Length: 510
Ligand code: ACM
Image (cartoon, rainbow, N blue to C red; front, top):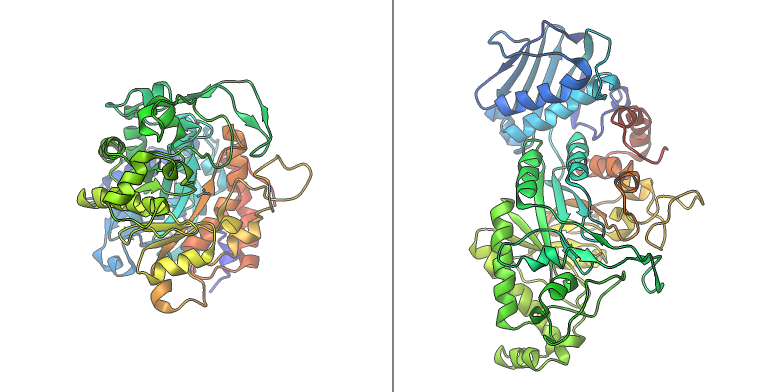
């Protein structure tokens, strides 16, 4: 059994045995794609074409075989088996998703020049002979990208999807709305993007700095761009989970439609500050109608089972001062305005559930998300344990280990990030989504983990990519592999840097 570091794959596969010899890909290589594997074969061709120029045509006698093998289903929907022998390569999986992951393993086994996007001179490409059986430790291996604080072009979001897929990360949570911007068009509410998609300027420096850049910022996607992004990601094994923030983090919507707020007569701009905004959605019927209409369109565009509706950082002072909100408290027999948060999330949760979706929200101090919610816990690991003990699905995302907006080192040369302690590579890699000291029943509720890239302090694709790598490599290794060692990861990561270079990824070198 060779050391995993002889095959520096990220994430580390569950089982790998080296074999003698190598398989050669060249102009004579063809693909035998069994029924149901054509999409995966197309992806393999399109990923290898730019550097290799190889046509890899379909053929019933192809040396490179893709088949659906129900046997592998015992290891879960994402498992795959890869056998590389001198004269044949066989990739097997029970489901297409497994094949898509196996294709990324093939890419990592090739010389890193195969990842370049320009034609290379060599005419043949060697793959080491190997036997791999691989399946993920966690079902949810996510990355959240905040396109609300700083809008990002769809070309960058696609590239981000490519880089997630390369590391077998399978969820992109797209943070589409916040106080500072609304990025998804909703046909019944055109001002959401027309007005809510633009702010006059942005704060420079941390929350409360009082310093602004004087430069307008804005942008939104078209519905078609989002639908195409969903399909693009799906063909690579990545699910896009939309996030629409409510009832807090909704100032951009209130700027567009003041009647959604607690003081309809007040006209506010899209927020230009960072931090927690006091302005929240009201709890009157019009607001619930608005949320349902928005979520209906969101569900049309995003087929993902999970729909994230925020729920974090929702001050209740406006409700306490609103006659409408206090009437709601009375009508619903609630204890006080603080209880409106749970009531609101419950209404939204039931709406999503009645449409066959699973609502998702951020855990907060002093609030409990209704039982149908999958909970993303970020602030305090005890929130995760409490939710798990209530029987809720949990995505563990503690900010000290998964927030990529914090600097990755305290080097003075590091670009400024979210103020606070650094989140270094080791903190990400040694994070335990299902802590060993939790009882088994609670640990079983943990469906995975997720990185968060908030973008108050990072505006450009180059900066976002730099913050993401190599920390996303560490998160991917942690989320996929069973107990990957830190030293073993570092050894693999040193060689993986060559792949990031070939993919022209901006990253912090080890
Ligand atoms: C969060 O960081 N407000 C989820």
